[in-house]
Every structure is written in structure tokens, then in C-alpha cells.
Length: 430
Image (cartoon, rainbow, N blue to C red):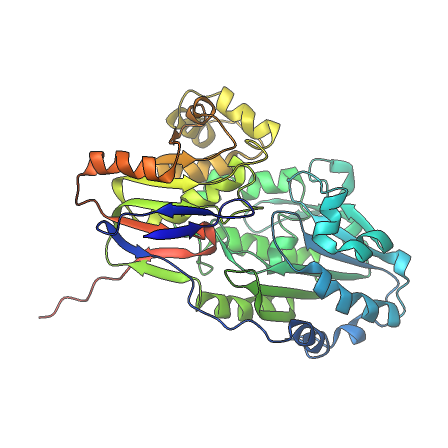
């Protein structure tokens, strides 16, 4: 069967053997909004759990709007073009409205990337800055969270009279779902906060996983942190496979987010009858597959449905290389994943972005990882504790030799945007 995988900007067509294919896991269909602009406009005036945005903005002297960085395909231009006039009509001067790119610990977004995130007119006419998580001078200390995480948040956000976040609700491999509180933590948090919040005592918890909120310490902690920092209003959207808006929510940071999660949960889950030998997955194409660091999310998406000793084949363009210098340093300092995991769980070792390798280690404990990419050589991939193949078809041929002609195969063309699982076993009768 010929299948298109999300890969880079244009996709990748691959041939999957019909005789081995158990299932292609996909979104449940959801109808795109016929007039998303009208829906956003209505939500700003009739939000969930808060007064209308115009009423909240009245009397405020400044505003900070946190938006996602280049790694999230949020339709900011559409949302902000409806929101910004309301803030100005409420009396907030344009020069006192800051659009703050919630980079977390990612690199800043500059030049044409700002146009890609915000649209030409907004990027040119409004005050736009990047959060810098590694600059302690840009943050204020708000005490500790219930689990002892030091809370350092961007002071530009904290000092604004009106605090707004704009984001996207989708599965997230640590926090259950993105959106809502995540724009603040980690989006506007300092390294010291993220270091504690992404430490093994949180990430190794069995409920710190995609699609899980209840009992997930990662979700619970950053919700508390975001509440402590404050948020007056959110707008979050849900996108389909073609990145069209199928749902939107606005209003209270928690109530609106949870309403959005309930909708997302109905469309992003799919199952196989039992674990399979091989899973072909992706990191959902650009921008999530631009680096090896981000592409780890695609590997994690396959873990629930692969057999122990199975193989995860990841197709990712990786057009921008491995990731941050700190992330690359981790690989130079360790000869194996086991050595790395021992150091982070038993010692004082810390490197920024280590949490991504910790997530990859969860997959490697269970299965091989074979990466198909144009962005890194086979020698480079070997140093990243994964294997390589020149094509998905070549990787499948090797798996067929390994597991035999009756190997079982599943594919997740959208990788981390879908929550894959094994069907619950029927209850025993008798």
C-alpha cells in the first residue's frame, strides 16, 4: 500500500507491504470550521468561564500576549487580527501591547520566522519579542510549587496588566496535552524552573505520558505554576490533519483548556488489536521534524503499540540538525543510553534538553529505533544511539528478515499528533 507520511514540508510517499500491514492509525474525521474567523470573534465575546475579552481589557494599561514559537503551527495571524483591535478599542495603546514568543528553552524566532508565526502586518506593526529562558535577568521569582519546583517566569509577562496566551491543543508526550498552561510553563519559564519540572522524578512517573492529565505530575505542576503566574484569558485551537481549525476555545485558562481537551480526545486516539513487530512513524513533518531533538516525539508516539524487541522506524527530515549545543553535548559525554540514564537518575549530572533523551530512552528500553532522514548521515545517527536506513522500504526489508515473513506492521503517518494504543482486552467471561 502506498502511504503518505508527514515529512518535512511536502511529505514522503512510502510503500508498505499489504501482507504485513495490520493498520494505519489515523485521526477520526472532524469537520473543519466553515468560518473560523467568525468562530474566534464569537468566542472573544462569549468565552468560557470569564467575561468577554473587551470587558477584561477595559481599564488595563498594558497587555502581554504569549504565542507559541515556530515549532507549533498555530494560526496566530487569524486569532490576533480579531483580538488586537479589541484590546486597542478597550484603551490599551498599541505600543503597550507586547506579543511575546513563548520559546521555553528553544532558540529565538527572528526575521522571516516572525512573519511565519504572526503574519506580515502584525510582525511589522506590533511590539514582538522572544522569551529567553537562559537569561535569569529576564525572570522574576514567585516561590516554589507544591512539589518544590522553583518558579521563575518572564517578568515582561508578569508585569503586564493583562495576560493572554494563544496556543494549540494536541497530544503532548509528557504533559498529556499541549495548550493552556503550557504557554506559561515551560513557554515563559526560566531554565531553573524547567530543569526541576523536567527532572526524572516527574518524567519517570508512569502517568507522565501522552493523553493523560489525571494523576500526571507534569500537568499538575505546570497548571499550578501557571495559576501562580496568572492568566486572564486564553485562546486555543484544535487542528486536523491538514492543519485546518476544527475547534476553538477561549476564556478561563483551565476551564477553556479542559473543554478543548475533551474535544481533542474524541479525534486523536486510535488502536491496534495487539502490539506489532514494527511501527512506521513520523514527527508530523515541519516544523516538528526540523531537528532530531523534536523528532524524538515521533519515536515516543510509537512506543505503546510496539512489541518488546520490536522496531520503530522514524521518518523525519531533520533539516536543521541535531538540536541545541547542550543537547549535542550529552551524546559526546556518554557512550550509551544506559550510562546516561544512570547519571541523571543517581547523580547531579544536568544538561539542558536532557529530558528529550530521557524520553527516547523509554522507547529504546522496549525496541530498536531506525531513523530515515536526509538531514543526518548514518555515522551521525549512530552517535545518537539509533540506527539508520536509506529509506523506509529498506528498513522494512531488514525487519522482514529479522522477524520473518509474518511480521506485523502498523503505521502512524502523523506521529505525535495521534495517541496510539492497544485495544483493551475483552473481559474474561465466567
